[in-house]
Length: 221
Image (cartoon, rainbow, N blue to C red):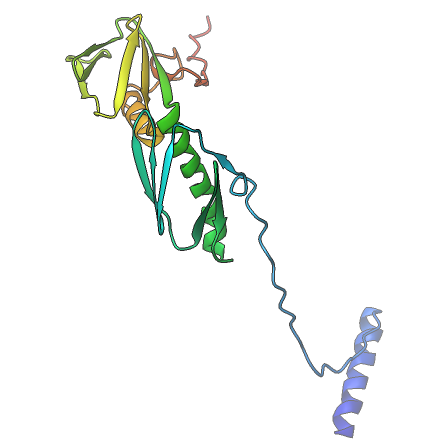
């Protein structure tokens, strides 16, 4: 043991003479790791209360909730990580357990709950605009007919829970009480002719900003 220690000291001294660096040997006896528990902050959206209007009826049955209002009725099933508390005309969405999955779903289900309450009481709407020569839209019965430059008109069946209104043949308004269905139907209209970046022709949302690109420059003389 003494011989090995003496050899180590000679090697360190020799290395220091060659490189000009002072090298010291420190015996390592124990390496330890400390585990620290990190608590996630509560969702800023999830902790906001939801006001229930007087014309909306809330029915809670375990993890299922039904919302009924003047415009319609919606239902939603909550996962076991989420709980609903009702205090007179106030709804609060809270976490039933402290897990990572509960933190992820807290704000989501609070937003879904708020959309249900607002939807059956006042409703939602999504507006689209047709831009292009000859582009036009009409409503015939339960069908939306689009002329978008194809060889044939595009016919789309309007869902029963939605209303579609066309103004000036180029402005479309989709309204209803289910926000997700409104967004899905509006997206299906837009996908037939998304706005192109050079001239802006196509179907776009009314509040959508289309980033324009500069066309190819002509040959220099």
